[in-house]
Image 1 (cartoon, rainbow, N blue to C red):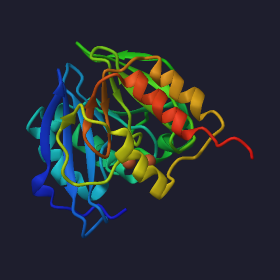
Image 2: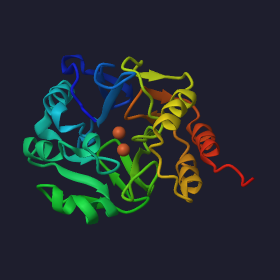
Image 3: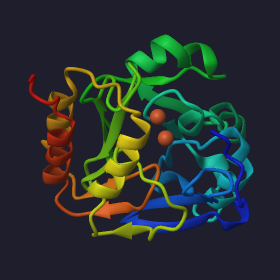
Image 4: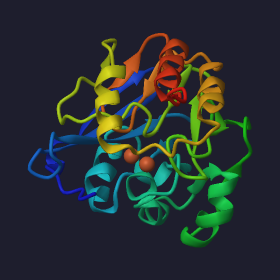
Amino acid sequence: MNAQSNTSSTRVDEIVDGIFRISTPVPPSVVPGGFTFNQYLIRDDEPLLFHTGPRMLFPAIRDAIERIVPVTKLRHVAFSHVEADECGSLNQFLAAAPQAAPLCGRIAAMVSIADLADRPPRALADQERLAIGQHTVQWLDAPHVPHGWECGFLADVTTRTLLCGDLFTQFGERHPAITESDILEPSEAARIGMDYYAHSPATGRTLERLASTAPTTLALMHGPAWRGDGATLLRSLASRLEPAPAA
Ligand SMILES: [Fe+2]
Ligand SMILES: [Fe+2]
């Protein structure tokens, strides 16, 4: 996906205590319907970035991070799975932040990141927790949900925020930083139109594991962040993904 956009319009909003949404709009002339690329920064003793954004957005995202913490202080560069918008500028961030290391699941580390990254990754096992100061994060394996064997998510257990990557992706370039409005139907329109899910037989079980963490904030990569009953919303998504019964 072409990531060209009006990078001067990259905005920064604190969506929950210590977690900042960095969002760059992509106009409809580039992506029909418009789009957003979001990253999330947890400001703490060991600052953590979730999603680097595509390589072409590196200068804009670096400058946006600088409004919150010096980029040189980043310690963890985390992401859900291996794609340009997830980790395209990983090595640029590693170069800018001498103490930083990639942070990802074990599959991503084994298959890709141990080779692609300029420094060795810190690989987290499923359910493994990492204290980064006031916040503690937990890695949750989510193979093939929505796509990618190596896929997983990071939950900030301190604020019950699920950094949910491509889940609930929706179009549009203008969204509030955080909303309590429905995000299921707009994201279902995008999902059905693009069919970006792998449709693994384990999708329902994986979404149920995410729901069982009872998140109260969902931090979307494409769209607004959302506040509400995350368990119910994730179970609603699971029900929409269930295969139709055989005729
Ligand atoms: Fe993706
Ligand atoms: Fe994405």
